[in-house]
Image (cartoon, rainbow, N blue to C red; front, side, top):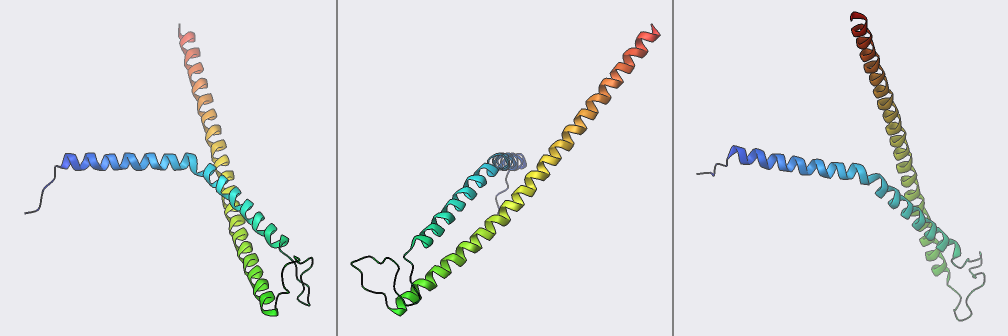
Length: 149
């Protein structure tokens, strides 16, 4: 026979889970933007380091000779040059895709920030209007009360 649980316990457990989820959601809402800012900044720095490393790698001329080669290394073969060139091209393509995704993410985040700022301004204007109406209503009631006395 299946075990029957107490409905009150089930409701309490559901409520605890809902509270925990709400706390998690609140934490994410508060901390996710700063975390994303830090991650995006780190990714931009990593991309910059990768690009600098590729730019700083020894350059090879069309003849296969490196410009300013190290003194103790032998000349690279055509196959080695082709492999290095292909590797650099793949790295650059990967960096480009990553940068495009980062820029798209930044555009989305900027749009979200602008929307949030607009919503905040709308809420502030609505609250100011409501407070002004309440003050006007109270002043009118006070004026009517004083006139009636």
